Length: 300
Image 1 (tube, rainbow, N blue to C red):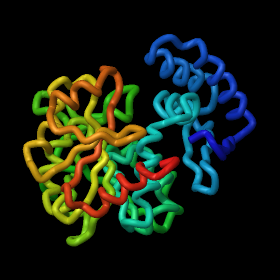
Image 2: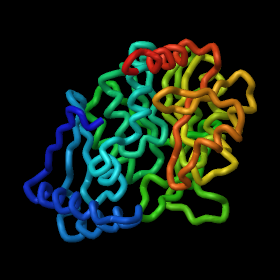
Image 3: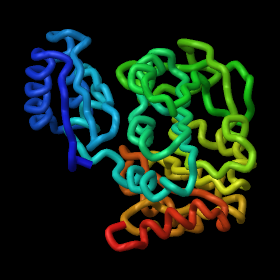
């Protein structure tokens, strides 16, 4: 990912803040310290200070320097989910549609913009949606949806923004306080019938409901990249999709590996602080076949 990587700054002060932050990050010994360093410097410098990260000729992705999540994953640790990037490139040319569900601030929508003619970026949290808009508003092939992915469309759900962790925002449980109300949309209502789309699903605990609203999309040959987190020993989203014997699940690594049981999935999740990416599709999906063939080619 770091190849052909270009960085621009919103101001000279942003450049100074970036250099200080990268130096402080080298001292961090826990994950929590990364965020503290970013937020601490963010109180000293302007909250508008930002970095623009561009991969090759792709559009830039804007990262505010007080953002403890993206400054860590896209600026300091530059190899961010490289397996997802590889899947995107192998799917390009085999489908026109990419769906970024739980799009956050639009990182994968920006990365996918040169590869697919139609992109749907779905984000529920109002503040994060505003940052998503900043990043994709000039990209004509990206359609934004301020919705929550769920089993059916049109429901009103309470949404919880997690303090200090915008990437962990999620649908609220019944006994939790909520910050805003959001309308739902089902994947089958997002993707036209007969379309085999590439779908990245990262919806913080709503994966099962999302899959329940995606039966037609799967039958039409869509391929999902979904997260099964290391802190979930029950592997709930994977266990759910494996209930359907028509589904094939692959662990996304240098060589994708088909996994048939929850025990096999649990075995690859060795870090409880990490989200692991898996593919799921119908076994006969042509898009899945193209992606797997891309991995199998030399240098794939």
